[in-house]
Image 1: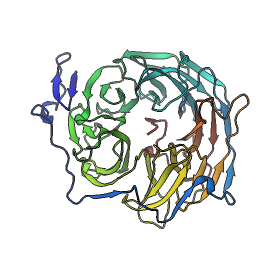
Image 2: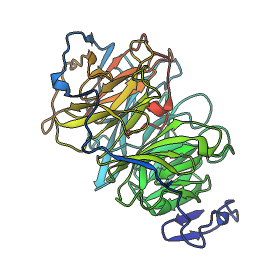
Image 3: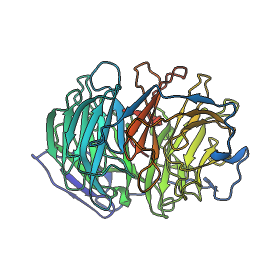
Image 4: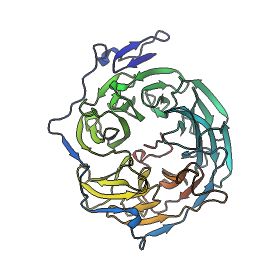
Length: 480
């Protein structure tokens, strides 16, 4: 097992007399590796004072006159004793139709949490199974380490979760425990599946603390490696696995640095790019390519007021600054514009005054700004089948276009026995994309924090696009 503190030291030990290849060749023993280059004259634009070229409007002032009104296809009341703010959606029984997995999390300290209980609902609202101790928090401001994944490669989904100091693997159809293995205390911030072993499917997993350390395990709980402060920086909220060099093994973009499949450091961003501190929020594959230098990634800096376009070698191609960029998505919002458009939320603002920005592909062209009650939790979807993506805002519960117009509003009638408002703050609405019906189209799934109800809207006209970069469930679900 290798324990790698890549900001300050490299300590390694051998387990069973087997060394992980490539660790010495990573260039870590002689000190901190060189950072990736920031090209001279790199395009950087401060958007703090930029005015949109198309529109700047609060969603409360939008006209609903021509907007479609969409009732839910399904309204499901979640089990009040077990449900939580975390929701993942996927087919657990093998019938081609999805189930809903809701989880609560125990919070023993600041920035420490673990999955404490799970309840699974069928689409008719009945409970398929329950697991764990529900005496925990029904709220989230972070990912919860509870995922749906075919870990064994047998064609059936398991529910895999990080409980307190252990990973537990449950039969998806029954909830019975298949196996579990120990992990360190506080290593339960999230679970990310990846193919470090090069077997052709994501059979390995990463667990981590909130900001400081990552552990890699195989499906049976064998520790492969661990890394502290990748490249000397905090970890991303969810590490991003991708085969950068085509060798059949996933590399890991761990935050402001990338790791090889053995945990050694591949590259890190230049110090001047990360000098504002913080950590990586969203990481998206914007464009794939055969070589690392041909791949393009979007990365947002929480606390650094920055969003970068990188290539797969860690070189920064352009940046925008001046705002607290959180989750970013991209798509074809306007077929008359070249390239694709970006949508990013600026959520660290007061309730009722949170911007959602539409940018051109260069990042520097601010096309439009919606001001919303809460701009976190948005997704892009082709709903009408016309080849253009629309923005679904979770709190807004509406589809917005690239021209400052609302195209559809979505009804969220509360099930009997539930309330639309928590005792302390407004109910937060979350948006998820998932192929609920098995027809290949991303359906819209709206849930709440605290966990209360779920509404499902069947996508009957849109393109059959289950792209992972849109965070289509169930694989590696994240709020970021």
